[in-house]
Amino acid sequence: MNTISENLIRIKSNLPEGVALVAVSKTKPVPEIMEAYEAGQRIFGENKIQEMAAKYEEMPKDIEWHMIGHIQRNKVKYMASFVCLIHAVDSLRLLTEINKQALKNNRVINCLLQLKIASEESKFGLTEDEVKQLLNSDEFQGFQNIKVVGLMGMATFTDNKELLQNEFGALKHLFDKLSINKTDNCNLKTLSMGMSDDYPIAIKNGSTMVRVGSSIFGKRNYNI
Ligand SMILES: *Cc1c(COP(=O)(O)O)cnc(C)c1O
Image 1 (cartoon, rainbow, N blue to C red):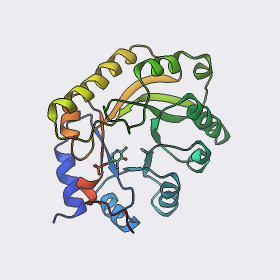
Image 2: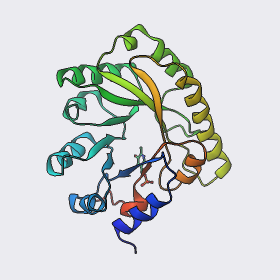
Image 3: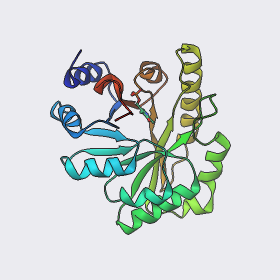
Protein backbone atom coordinates (compact mmCIF):
# COMPACT_ATOMS: atom_id res chain seq x y z
CA MET A 1 0.00 0.00 0.00
CA ASN A 2 1.16 3.53 -0.77
CA THR A 3 1.36 6.22 1.85
CA ILE A 4 -0.91 9.27 1.86
CA SER A 5 1.89 11.56 0.73
CA GLU A 6 2.85 9.21 -2.12
CA ASN A 7 -0.76 9.08 -3.32
CA LEU A 8 -1.08 12.83 -3.10
CA ILE A 9 2.11 13.54 -5.00
CA ARG A 10 1.22 11.03 -7.73
CA ILE A 11 -2.26 12.50 -8.22
CA LYS A 12 -1.04 16.09 -8.19
CA SER A 13 1.67 15.42 -10.74
CA ASN A 14 -0.99 14.12 -13.14
CA LEU A 15 -3.34 17.08 -12.83
CA PRO A 16 -3.22 19.58 -15.68
CA GLU A 17 -2.41 23.19 -14.82
CA GLY A 18 -5.50 25.08 -13.72
CA VAL A 19 -7.17 22.09 -12.06
CA ALA A 20 -7.31 22.45 -8.27
CA LEU A 21 -7.27 19.45 -5.96
CA VAL A 22 -9.60 19.26 -2.97
CA ALA A 23 -8.35 16.47 -0.70
CA VAL A 24 -11.53 14.97 0.73
CA SER A 25 -10.68 14.19 4.34
CA LYS A 26 -14.15 13.32 5.71
CA THR A 27 -14.09 10.62 8.42
CA LYS A 28 -10.26 10.76 8.49
CA PRO A 29 -8.43 11.61 11.73
CA VAL A 30 -6.23 14.69 12.10
CA PRO A 31 -2.86 12.84 12.00
CA GLU A 32 -3.70 11.42 8.57
CA ILE A 33 -4.81 14.80 7.29
CA MET A 34 -1.58 16.27 8.68
CA GLU A 35 0.37 13.82 6.55
CA ALA A 36 -1.24 15.34 3.46
CA TYR A 37 -0.64 18.82 4.86
CA GLU A 38 3.06 18.07 5.39
CA ALA A 39 3.22 16.92 1.77
CA GLY A 40 2.04 20.37 0.71
CA GLN A 41 -1.74 19.99 0.44
CA ARG A 42 -3.70 23.03 1.67
CA ILE A 43 -7.26 22.51 0.40
CA PHE A 44 -9.36 19.98 2.30
CA GLY A 45 -12.99 18.99 1.82
CA GLU A 46 -15.42 17.77 4.46
CA ASN A 47 -19.10 16.84 4.26
CA LYS A 48 -20.18 17.38 7.89
CA ILE A 49 -20.09 20.90 9.27
CA GLN A 50 -19.31 20.03 12.89
CA GLU A 51 -16.54 17.62 11.90
CA MET A 52 -15.01 20.31 9.69
CA ALA A 53 -15.27 22.93 12.48
CA ALA A 54 -13.51 20.60 14.95
CA LYS A 55 -10.69 19.94 12.48
CA TYR A 56 -10.44 23.66 11.71
CA GLU A 57 -9.90 24.37 15.42
CA GLU A 58 -7.20 21.77 15.73
CA MET A 59 -5.24 22.24 12.51
CA PRO A 60 -2.97 24.89 10.93
CA LYS A 61 -4.77 28.07 9.98
CA ASP A 62 -3.47 28.28 6.42
CA ILE A 63 -5.74 25.38 5.42
CA GLU A 64 -8.60 26.23 3.07
CA TRP A 65 -11.67 24.33 4.23
CA HIS A 66 -14.27 23.41 1.63
CA MET A 67 -17.73 22.18 2.58
CA ILE A 68 -18.63 19.62 -0.09
CA GLY A 69 -21.64 17.91 1.52
CA HIS A 70 -25.36 18.58 1.63
CA ILE A 71 -26.06 21.36 4.14
CA GLN A 72 -28.66 21.87 6.84
CA ARG A 73 -29.45 25.55 7.16
CA ASN A 74 -29.34 25.57 10.95
CA LYS A 75 -25.67 24.53 10.89
CA VAL A 76 -24.33 27.21 8.54
CA LYS A 77 -23.45 29.34 11.58
CA TYR A 78 -20.82 26.82 12.72
CA MET A 79 -18.69 27.33 9.62
CA ALA A 80 -19.49 30.89 8.55
CA SER A 81 -16.41 32.39 10.21
CA PHE A 82 -13.86 30.28 8.34
CA VAL A 83 -15.24 28.23 5.44
CA CYS A 84 -13.47 29.00 2.19
CA LEU A 85 -15.87 27.55 -0.39
CA ILE A 86 -19.29 25.90 -0.10
CA HIS A 87 -19.77 23.45 -2.98
CA ALA A 88 -23.28 22.10 -2.68
CA VAL A 89 -25.66 25.06 -2.53
CA ASP A 90 -29.00 23.93 -3.90
CA SER A 91 -31.62 26.47 -2.86
CA LEU A 92 -32.32 30.16 -2.46
CA ARG A 93 -33.31 29.52 1.16
CA LEU A 94 -29.88 28.10 1.88
CA LEU A 95 -28.16 31.02 0.14
CA THR A 96 -30.25 33.40 2.22
CA GLU A 97 -28.95 31.79 5.41
CA ILE A 98 -25.33 31.76 4.16
CA ASN A 99 -25.64 35.44 3.26
CA LYS A 100 -27.02 36.21 6.73
CA GLN A 101 -24.28 34.32 8.57
CA ALA A 102 -21.57 35.77 6.32
CA LEU A 103 -22.83 39.26 7.12
CA LYS A 104 -22.66 38.50 10.86
CA ASN A 105 -19.02 37.54 10.36
CA ASN A 106 -18.30 40.51 8.14
CA ARG A 107 -17.30 38.22 5.26
CA VAL A 108 -18.21 37.38 1.70
CA ILE A 109 -18.55 33.60 1.37
CA ASN A 110 -17.85 31.97 -1.97
CA CYS A 111 -20.38 29.37 -3.08
CA LEU A 112 -20.93 26.91 -5.91
CA LEU A 113 -24.41 25.94 -7.07
CA GLN A 114 -24.95 22.20 -7.22
CA LEU A 115 -26.54 20.94 -10.41
CA LYS A 116 -28.34 17.66 -10.67
CA ILE A 117 -26.49 15.91 -13.46
CA ALA A 118 -26.88 12.26 -12.52
CA SER A 119 -29.75 10.13 -13.69
CA GLU A 120 -29.91 8.56 -10.23
CA GLU A 121 -32.83 9.70 -8.09
CA SER A 122 -30.76 10.11 -4.94
CA LYS A 123 -28.48 12.96 -5.96
CA PHE A 124 -29.20 16.48 -4.76
CA GLY A 125 -29.04 19.54 -6.93
CA LEU A 126 -30.83 22.15 -9.01
CA THR A 127 -32.07 21.79 -12.56
CA GLU A 128 -30.93 24.21 -15.25
CA ASP A 129 -34.23 26.11 -15.06
CA GLU A 130 -34.00 26.38 -11.29
CA VAL A 131 -30.46 27.79 -11.50
CA LYS A 132 -31.53 30.44 -13.99
CA GLN A 133 -34.53 31.35 -11.86
CA LEU A 134 -32.36 31.63 -8.77
CA LEU A 135 -29.71 33.81 -10.43
CA ASN A 136 -32.37 36.09 -11.92
CA SER A 137 -34.35 36.57 -8.73
CA ASP A 138 -34.41 39.98 -7.02
CA GLU A 139 -33.62 38.30 -3.74
CA PHE A 140 -30.40 36.81 -5.10
CA GLN A 141 -29.32 40.04 -6.67
CA GLY A 142 -29.68 41.78 -3.32
CA PHE A 143 -27.23 39.51 -1.50
CA GLN A 144 -24.11 41.41 -0.46
CA ASN A 145 -22.25 38.70 1.46
CA ILE A 146 -22.16 35.74 -0.86
CA LYS A 147 -20.59 35.26 -4.24
CA VAL A 148 -21.47 32.44 -6.62
CA VAL A 149 -18.13 31.55 -8.19
CA GLY A 150 -19.02 28.35 -10.00
CA LEU A 151 -20.98 25.14 -10.36
CA MET A 152 -20.64 21.67 -8.85
CA GLY A 153 -21.99 18.31 -9.90
CA MET A 154 -21.84 14.64 -8.99
CA ALA A 155 -22.11 12.09 -11.75
CA THR A 156 -23.91 8.78 -11.58
CA PHE A 157 -22.05 6.07 -9.64
CA THR A 158 -21.11 3.92 -12.61
CA ASP A 159 -18.17 2.80 -14.69
CA ASN A 160 -20.07 3.51 -17.90
CA LYS A 161 -17.65 6.02 -19.43
CA GLU A 162 -20.10 7.28 -22.00
CA LEU A 163 -22.70 8.12 -19.38
CA LEU A 164 -20.08 9.92 -17.24
CA GLN A 165 -18.91 11.81 -20.29
CA ASN A 166 -22.46 12.90 -21.10
CA GLU A 167 -23.19 14.05 -17.56
CA PHE A 168 -19.96 16.02 -17.14
CA GLY A 169 -20.27 17.37 -20.67
CA ALA A 170 -23.78 18.68 -19.98
CA LEU A 171 -22.58 20.49 -16.85
CA LYS A 172 -19.65 22.05 -18.72
CA HIS A 173 -22.02 23.22 -21.44
CA LEU A 174 -24.26 24.94 -18.90
CA PHE A 175 -21.22 26.39 -17.12
CA ASP A 176 -20.01 27.98 -20.36
CA LYS A 177 -23.46 29.41 -21.07
CA LEU A 178 -23.91 30.89 -17.60
CA SER A 179 -20.33 32.20 -17.36
CA ILE A 180 -21.09 34.91 -19.90
CA ASN A 181 -23.26 36.91 -17.50
CA LYS A 182 -21.17 38.37 -14.71
CA THR A 183 -22.68 40.40 -11.88
CA ASP A 184 -21.45 41.66 -8.50
CA ASN A 185 -22.37 38.41 -6.78
CA CYS A 186 -22.10 35.93 -9.63
CA ASN A 187 -18.95 35.26 -11.62
CA LEU A 188 -18.54 31.63 -12.63
CA LYS A 189 -14.92 30.50 -12.72
CA THR A 190 -14.87 27.18 -10.90
CA LEU A 191 -16.33 23.94 -12.20
CA SER A 192 -16.16 21.38 -9.39
CA MET A 193 -16.60 17.90 -10.78
CA GLY A 194 -14.78 14.60 -10.49
CA MET A 195 -14.05 12.19 -7.62
CA SER A 196 -11.58 9.32 -7.15
CA ASP A 197 -13.21 7.04 -9.70
CA ASP A 198 -14.16 9.55 -12.38
CA TYR A 199 -11.92 12.61 -12.12
CA PRO A 200 -9.87 11.90 -15.28
CA ILE A 201 -13.10 11.95 -17.31
CA ALA A 202 -14.28 15.08 -15.49
CA ILE A 203 -11.01 16.83 -16.35
CA LYS A 204 -11.35 15.87 -20.01
CA ASN A 205 -14.74 17.54 -19.88
CA GLY A 206 -13.55 20.83 -18.42
CA SER A 207 -13.40 20.37 -14.66
CA THR A 208 -11.30 23.01 -12.86
CA MET A 209 -11.58 21.43 -9.39
CA VAL A 210 -11.59 17.76 -8.46
CA ARG A 211 -12.66 16.35 -5.09
CA VAL A 212 -10.58 13.29 -4.34
CA GLY A 213 -10.81 11.28 -1.12
CA SER A 214 -10.23 7.54 -1.17
CA SER A 215 -7.47 7.64 -3.79
CA ILE A 216 -5.47 9.78 -1.37
CA PHE A 217 -6.47 8.55 2.09
CA GLY A 218 -7.63 5.02 1.33
CA LYS A 219 -11.10 3.60 1.79
CA ARG A 220 -13.33 5.19 4.42
CA ASN A 221 -14.67 3.21 7.33
CA TYR A 222 -18.09 4.52 8.36
CA ASN A 223 -18.52 2.01 11.19
CA ILE A 224 -16.17 3.54 13.73
C1 LIG B 1 -16.90 11.79 -0.43
C2 LIG B 1 -17.04 12.79 -1.52
C3 LIG B 1 -16.05 12.92 -2.52
C4 LIG B 1 -14.80 12.04 -2.57
O1 LIG B 1 -15.12 10.73 -2.90
P1 LIG B 1 -13.96 9.66 -3.27
O2 LIG B 1 -14.67 8.67 -4.12
O3 LIG B 1 -13.51 9.11 -1.98
O4 LIG B 1 -12.90 10.39 -3.99
C5 LIG B 1 -16.22 13.90 -3.48
N1 LIG B 1 -17.29 14.69 -3.49
C6 LIG B 1 -18.26 14.61 -2.57
C7 LIG B 1 -19.42 15.53 -2.64
C8 LIG B 1 -18.18 13.65 -1.56
O5 LIG B 1 -19.16 13.57 -0.65
